[in-house]
Amino acid sequence: MKLFFTITLILLSSIIIAQTDSKIYDIISAVSSQRIEKDINILAGFGTRNTFSDTISETRGIGAARRWIKSEFETISKDCNNCLNVFYQKDFVTKEMGSRVPHDTWVVNVIAIQKGTKYPNRYIIMSGDIDSRASSATDFTTDAPGANDNASGMAGTIEAARVLSKYTFENSIVYVGLSGEEQGLFGGGGLAKYAKDKGWDIIGILNNDMIGNIKGVDGVIDNRTFRIFSEPTNLTDDENKVKRRRFYGGEVDGISRQLARYVHKSVKTYMPEMNPKMIYRLDRFGRGGHHRPFNDLGYAGIRIMEAHENYTQQHQDIREENGIKYGDVVEHVNFDYAAKLTAVNAINLAGLAWAPPTPSEVKIGGIVEPSVKFKWKKVNDPNIKGYKIYWRDTTSPTWDHSRFVGDVDNFVLDGIVIDNFFFGIATVGKNGHESPVVFPTEVFR
Image 1 (tube, rainbow, N blue to C red):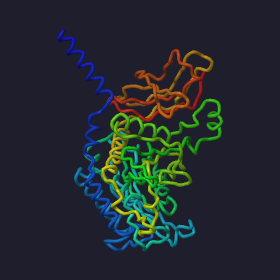
Image 2 (tube, rainbow, N blue to C red):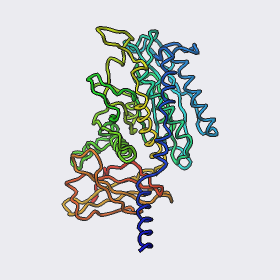
Image 3 (cartoon, rainbow, N blue to C red):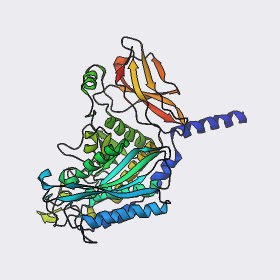
Image 4 (tube, helix red, strand yellow):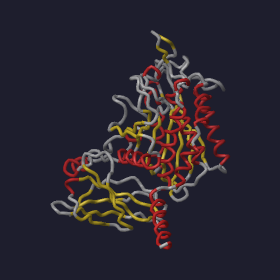
């Protein structure tokens, strides 16, 4: 009997290990709200970080801010035996390029790359924005501390680099401060083009824009809920793929939506106290963020941000009118909440950086049959454990059912009718980490 219980405990332990990775919990615990608070104060202390503000001063303007960010990444790199490649990436922007460009300038991004050991050309990216703005986007002299928008996202990105630089990953991680967001998403556009020109294989970008406010303009106070914005389909899909969606589905199953579902699932698994809310939209109504230029070029990209915005504290000159204090100042930032959303990013960066590549050439069959059939091209990697088939009701936002089918390149789900569900397939590594789900876009009989 004692032997039976011992074997049972071992089996249960192996099941638990297969479902979660203890290192992920260590990453959550390592994120520091105190360090994030310090960094937000430093960034807000540059007075204004408007894209067209002072670039010479050591204490004021976007020039001082980006030099400080670069120095922080370099310090982190020294602490991890030079594990980060830190550099500027820049593009020249002229006043003919938009109404928010008062004069020609360089838009400068600060990039830190932590190279993967097995797939160095596969990149998962976390971004925050360097720049800030006052009521007018072209006012580059008025104080615009941008404590929440977006020192919070930038501080979170730096903190994620501090924590994750203690680990090694199979895929590469990019930590980046993007500029020119308030003038037309110039920084994201420049980096997306840079990545395409360099031939980067981008897993996705997690764009963090405002992760520190818990009190909404509607009076709601919530320190657990956050939003994940994602586009439903890929803008670069050809006409044949668009036509196939009409008959086979996929209207809400593009690569960005799968990235959003990946984040949702990992948070529900490792941070059950948090409430991730998937928003089926590119961004807030009529607005934009730095993931969009990546979507435009066919890359997966999502926006992670607070659930309840306060419009009196963003894009506002610092002032008081009718008893209301306007301005994006440090006193309105909740540092514990910013740390939670930083941890959300960190665990997803880690999970994706430890995960194997997705299967390719995923096909589905089973028209007018009592079962669903799948074919796919396997990943050439000895550390692949196998593949997992996911399915969900057609009205469900999340993958609710799954079956691990082993290290095979085809499978039949008996007794499940293809008409009633949507399906996808993920690669599972021997370390337990999974790739994002791939929605089948080809049909076979």
